[in-house]
Image 1 (cartoon, one colour):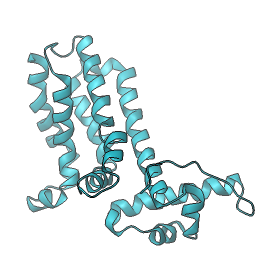
Image 2 (cartoon, rainbow, N blue to C red; image 1 turned 180 degrees about the vertical axis):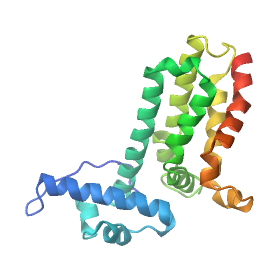
Image 3 (cartoon, rainbow, N blue to C red; image 1 turned 90 degrees about the horizontal axis):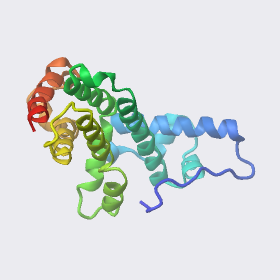
Image 4 (spheres, one colour; image 1 turned 120 degrees about the vertical axis):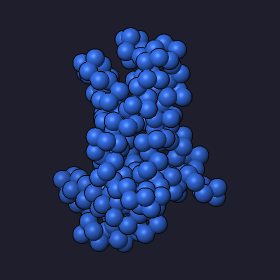
Length: 219
């Protein structure tokens, strides 16, 4: 992959106009996300994405510059949705006073578990020591969710919801680790018969919320 993660869309002579360009780009993004979830990064190629989208594989290079550019666009799109969840939680604070820890955990589960492939692809990219993208991915995507969560926890402390002695950096890291690990360690969860649907249920959400609620309130 190249360090330029998000090359701008370009338009050349003899190619579709803006409407068709937009449609093709959307199709390629949707196809890439579908295949990442269905078969995983190791089995996704330019040709499989193009076939799923119903376009020529050369369109990946035309619209996104490279396979890496398409992958970056998919990651950006996924994180844009997650960032919007954090912004909404921060702006609409009515939930601060109604079982806030449970509401927070439920919101994170809904955001991250809607795209379980995201955790898997990030782990697969940053785990190998030989990965040229390791530092780039960690810098651009790795800490983003944790930082946004930490800022939200800081806001809740200022509002008097959680104890001021709480180390929000530690809590954010712990919370993200507990919630994301099952998505990236599917073989482990499968071995104990825990499915993604199980992790979306109240029992898991209540379990995680209870782990953190007492700590957050007592410091």
